[in-house]
Image (tube, rainbow, N blue to C red; front, side):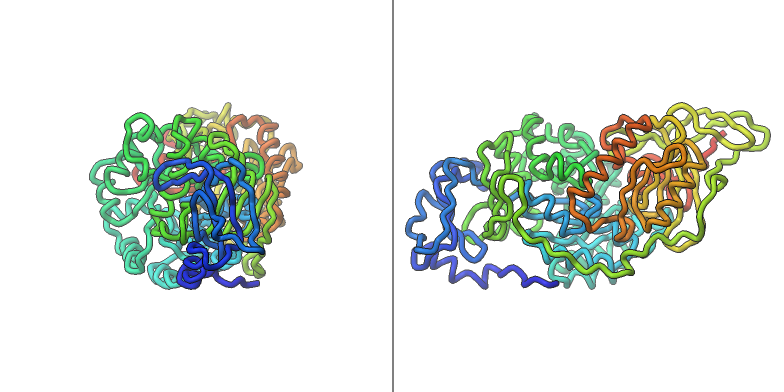
Length: 598
């Protein structure tokens, strides 16, 4: 199914002008509301908004001159009229949903625009997968702009992906109708060291007049950071402390601060605005990664705005960070992000600016949600079989595939261990002394085994390492074909036999996430599209996600939204330690290190 592109301002200019002047009737008028103007940071009572052709024609104390016999009147009745919310950086695949079902999930929460980087599917299906995501995005009743993925693999030489993205791919995609810019430039050492391919991708984006997304996951704010900024990225969402936000804004970047399912980076950075008093127009709220249970149970960008307010931010400033700041950053200030003439009629009606209940959502001049129910049609793309047959393992695995051999004669070893940090993407490089039994290193206490199973080219490869922080107990394993960003299969467990069972279960299923305990599955989410997404409704996937997290807790894990930490343990561009299909990676130096150090 295809959908006609949303009319441009030029297509509708005469209609807008005539309605604003009173020469033609509006299609819809919102009456008697409190106009939240994010340009001036004002809340102005007793205002009307006149809408026609999917855009705002007039805003003022009275729109009676725009009224005709067939004009639909919506009584705002003293409620706040705020712009639809914009997510400045996110990955639809992290919701384990297709663009259609993700849209259906977030529309009732007031999200009317998303800037999405589909680099997850790019690693599995290459440019063809990006095009599928892009095409379904354009079919939706809200605005979903696609950033062309920049880094597949995320760190060349550190991992092997199903496909690679080239500078030619980037240049080709810049002509697609829904491409807004370049996705997060994760290969920050490559940019800082003037890697020709990275600079060619950035150059192709800038020649097209589009925005380059950033990803600088390093605490080094010296010359390496300056070199990265000079390389062209215009924003960054990897900050974790106030100094990160300050440095990015001072160097002319937009600081994107994120609240995802497991990334709680707003409170530690928003103090740059609330306490230091820096210019808030250079800070943007985003989610980055939200799984379906968060979307269904807690919200989306409305959750992020509420959280910013709870962290001490003025509600009107928080709204700017989720509306006009984002639109301006992507060059869309004349199109989105405010309730002013000419802009798309994306409006939320809410009775309170602080708690932000989302009562009515209007997108492109149509009511798309009311009191938590999505009223819009969200069409699905016809996903081909090539997108559904992506778990290419050479064979079923056995317990022996997950052995970590110890040096001859050793009774114990000192091992390098990935340390999970709750509510943050970075890990810690830890060392533990672990026992050896029959020549094999044994997990002990809070240390579990982790393996990366190759699933793109059927090589049969299995890389084994160790991880701490999940708190798993008993005889269990968790496996997932969501393993950012290479998206091989990642398996964490306390017992090699359970790890083999979980991996083989996903091979048979064709992708997904599962937890095994004592030889049987406790919970499973099937993700048939690229091993990353389901095309089932969000509520259904959310219920399975809730069951998965309950199963994790039943196995001893008490971390908040620990699934997200699990899925990022192979992301070899975020410090400190990660696992890839090529070995254990020290991201501080971008070098492979041995699992056993002594």
